[in-house]
Length: 458
Ligand SMILES: Cc1ncc(COP(=O)(O)O)c(C=O)c1O
Picture 1: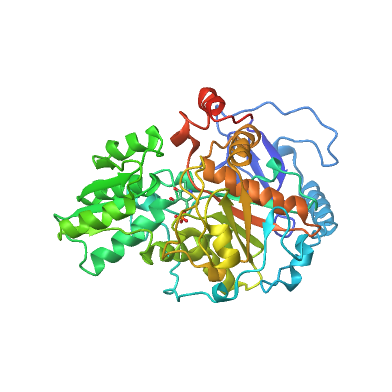
Picture 2: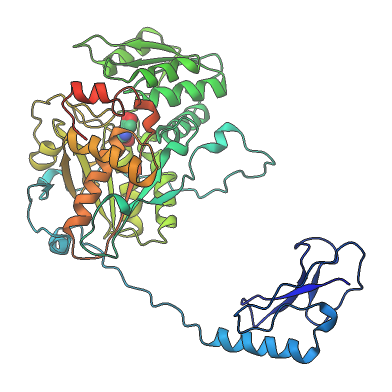
């Protein structure tokens, strides 16, 4: 005899279904309440012994009476009626003019937080193109490598810190899920799309880009996909892993000598070769636009608009400017915080409008010795200064507490988030970028010899 289990689906108005033990989805085994199947040979199952469940024990279908079915329906309807919706908490937002920063733990600059922007930096410098929210793979059956760019997960990494308020969450955007393993794929997609649409980049051309490594990887990857020659310029600080990745895509890699400016090398090469397309990520506004159009809308949607703080370190400034602008347009109370490595010129420039002499630091890809055109301090509400040791220790903490292996700039970003979380009485939703993969730095920040050499104790 064919036997079935009674299971209750608590969705809907006390729905009741009977299924065989064979499994859902097979013809003839899922039955609506009240229907009975003819026994079929070879599908008999043993009836399980009764449990402590308040519901009737599982029975053979032929033994289930209509009355028993009705009783189960009534029990489910009654239990559903007792379920109350959880209370939703309202989250405070912060006034970016500064007045409400007291709820954030500080009214004036503190030992870790620089507030009080100089007057001339207070107005955002530019407008953005409308953001487009397109489906991931419109009209296609299978994805291509281009479709892998963007739509990265947002992951709860609160475990790496001790927020003052138990309802604070710290969320990291897992940008190493992009095919080039960093968030720079987003801006390169936008820059290539725009340049091709405007006729600045045509078949047969060579693309040249200066980069601390990640943009170089993305340029090399995009050129491989779209059939251009690539020339990438980086400096000695770039990890061997990033250099190898750039070459792996078939790009030519040039390394600037100490004292040489790799951004100037890009300009000089583009001038000397008029058919080359210069990416110019430091001044090209299609860089911040790439984030304004993709990561900004993603973060807003993934937090259901609950984001209170966006934290990011800057190099070109494309990330913080593009995402910061988008989030503030949606909610002007979102606080945009620049995480800055000790030694970078951004913090002092933010405070005074003056450039001071840079001091070398270890973390790759963030901080700067000049102010790039893509950076918009108009959207920045505060700066958190983070030194190498704190940033790199946080990388180890993230790997060991969350299982995510991230690069140094992600550690720096998350350290800044942790300080904000640990200093605020209010419940916050803090979002940051996990900019690239720690696998790009295995020979450095995850290498005991290298750490010892640089006096970093984990
Ligand atoms: C690893 C890493 N993190 C962060 C950044 C900073 O991003 P942005 O140039 O958009 O300011 C970069 C830029 O090169 C980077 O390579």
